[in-house]
Length: 539
Image 1 (cartoon, rainbow, N blue to C red):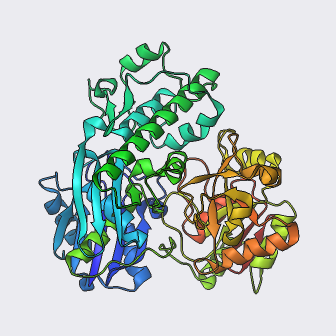
Image 2 (cartoon, helix red, strand yellow; image 1 turned 45 degrees about the vertical axis):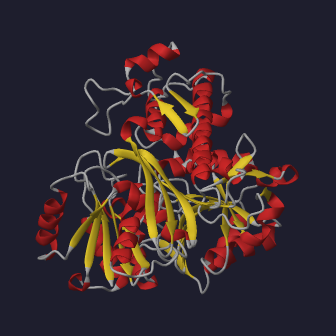
Image 3 (cartoon, helix red, strand yellow; image 1 turned 135 degrees about the vertical axis):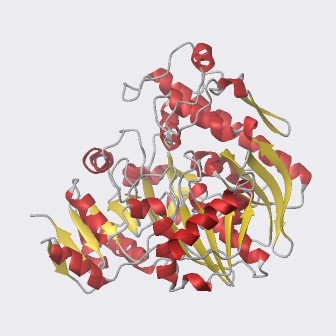
């Protein structure tokens, strides 16, 4: 059976539209609208281009689709809106079903994990009138919701209002996470949010209600927050002071403590189940998920590469597969987007008069450039799903010094100096360089790990100020080309790790097409670009 999962901007506040295809329970394509439209997060847009990209990638005709699933059970007319939209685009609309926003997150996490049984947790800002769900899931019975948490208790809203107060914008929560290690947890936020037995308590009166935010670009915090902290909000672009660092650290700690309290509550309900599948925007906070690795209540923790609303389409496709009687397959790797042939890359290079060389294997020149201290764009195979580049649409550099980190921030990414970069490491070597909590795989940059102190100087560009790093382990079975690149570089340098950051500039989506890659390459300080079997350099 063929299921199309969809998520899109039926209202202006909905973001990260995408489409995903399940064929007999296996996710064969997942495409995000922002990559094709070139508008970050695509607030208010429907996934027109993403649908077509999924069909093309899977070589499936519109008429072959058996079922469409979308979030939105609390929107009375959402089904009619989708039907009108799809009939306009494709001339018809297959059977369409709705699923709760939070249940779609749970499906992304549980079915993608491959686990037979797990506790499931979804936490984000809001969706279908709630901010989260607790559930118990098994392969046979599916997902059984235990509790739905109302939006007025939203951990996601708490973190977002603190993000705005600190002078950042919507979607910049990761900046607060990156800033937090520079501060001290000295700011008392317990009157806003605090952990309690069974979870947490959040005072919604700190969220701006008059008028209620109707746009993603309005600050969500009320004046009450500024009064409590004794200072007005930091103006965007203003200097970051110690006070702001301390607010960030206190915010992060409070989130972590509430998450741990929630996991304790889940464990108390089903103490024999020691696996956790976690999704929703809060699950992207890899400093918080790190705390779960040490939990006395959990043996395995799975966070999918598409934990945020970017992954709702995947959850919808999984949910539809289960409805139609298919057995959902584990998500084997995140490389589910579009692919561009060497011939299409060559045509783009020639059309733009680029200086390039064709090679038999991109691994050797890539490793040589990295070993020589060059910063490269790396563009191979199908684009990865989710917010984090995982080796197919990446900017890469060696990780030996903080100088290279500062250079990438300043000359390539044009972003704040406190922002960390991720290490991609050969999976077999991760235990030598990081404390892994007796686990072997961290393939999606969804957890931070403590660096082994004796090794930290050799990977200074990817170890944050608190001694942690957002690790991506790489193995040959899921990404052979990227694995061979790191292995080849390791032979030249003695270090099986490279710096990996997303192939985009500040404020832009990750590159999608060869033309996007060229525009980014010529618009920043990258030294070389390797696309498929072509090495592109600047005059």
